[in-house]
Image (cartoon, rainbow, N blue to C red; front, side, top):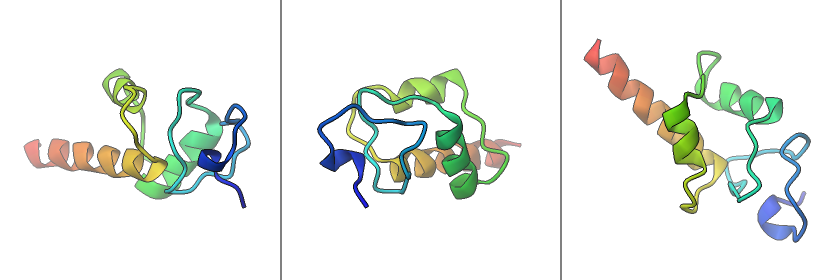
Length: 82
């Protein structure tokens, strides 16, 4: 199985088999495939707001595992405030 860090072509975020090691690249798209992955990692309550989307595409190196972990970190902090 090839991950996008091994490919030289544009990432197809619609059909790529995503894993925690999939690199978020400059071609990142918030597709149904991405939402399905994040729902599996974070639960069905996982929704992406504008601030979080901006963090995902900010240009810093990250993987889909980092994205899932950051969503969980942010929402754990929100839950503690309630």
